[in-house]
Length: 148
Image (cartoon, rainbow, N blue to C red; front, side, top):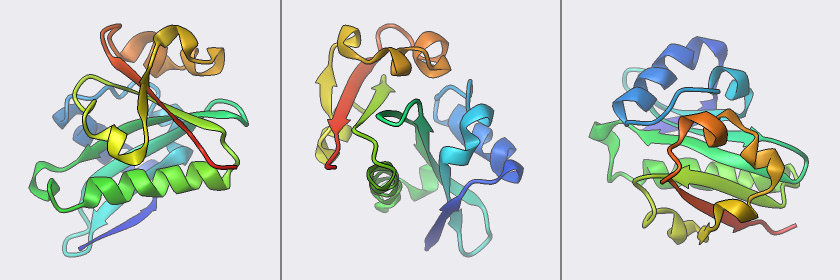
């Protein structure tokens, strides 16, 4: 079993390692670490999952850096992490969540995300490091309107 908790500064190296292993960018992670949630294996306290919520304004946030250790894939851990961060965004009064993906276009619609045009993304999201630099222009942009 894995338990979810807020990421701390001491998790940074393990988070970055997990992201690199999953082919995801690490740019901007350290700066937005306070919005990250990690999954810790209860057996050996190893970091086995991560997801980030990068709040840009009171209205918009970026769901980023969703990754699960290969040994834990298919266990529902990714779903727990994403569901947790969506609930966190709702509790903060965020109106819409955005994400960029090159591999999970089929995964995120199960949470209600829909593909959207890059041009329709708010400037606050466009100005994030992930949007400007870390993700390729070919990445799929997805959005989720949240209940208020």
